[in-house]
Image 1 (cartoon, rainbow, N blue to C red):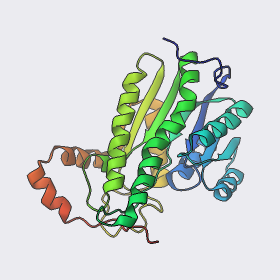
Image 2 (cartoon, rainbow, N blue to C red; image 1 turned 90 degrees about the vertical axis):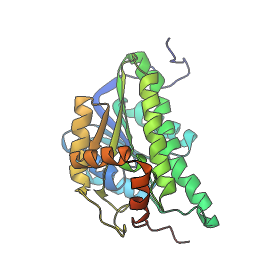
Image 3 (cartoon, rainbow, N blue to C red; image 1 turned 120 degrees about the vertical axis):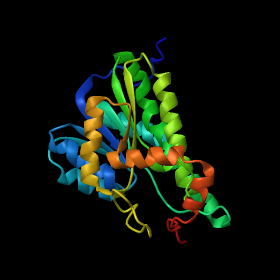
Image 4 (cartoon, rainbow, N blue to C red; image 1 turned 135 degrees about the horizontal axis):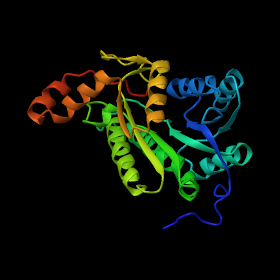
Length: 269
């Protein structure tokens, strides 16, 4: 069945081979991915909430890029940003839903309730709003790549990070469902589960972060995974072993170990 619609403005566009669209592009892993792809001569489309930082990055990178400010929580704003980039520069072949937020939360604290919503909206609904504008057009042309950045934090519940761990568990399941949903369409759905990456999101973590890697190293590894069209990967490889162990540990072992872990700092208002 062909789900492309006549009123989809992207359906008639020609794809640009190798081109990439990245959300959360203004800093951290998103900026590293941007620099990696732009440095190899790839046309990049950039979306992020912070317009000033996004414009600065767009002005610094070599090659051809297009940038639009939008919040991934806002479906209409995302459609407009995607259309503005695609109508001017062509339909990207690869879409990387990288935008995300990590902040400590405590269920017992009433002030954290809106933070729970924010984390879920950005980390889960943001994936939906990023991919939705592209699927009909990619299905019609018979190929395309959708990449979601999840996390090994989605493997088990983490104390003091209930919102983040829950959002990444939901992201992993959503991406798996989407991969099966699009099976046979020519669209590849890739789930990336990083461990710790040196960014502002990890800068204030008051606990040991094993196998932490730089954003630049992570970007290179992710690009390699995308090139190979590997549908699921944990980076770095050492964290794949840790994640597997976390997943299979029985509760009577995991619970007391996790209870001793340090809590991620809450947002102070």
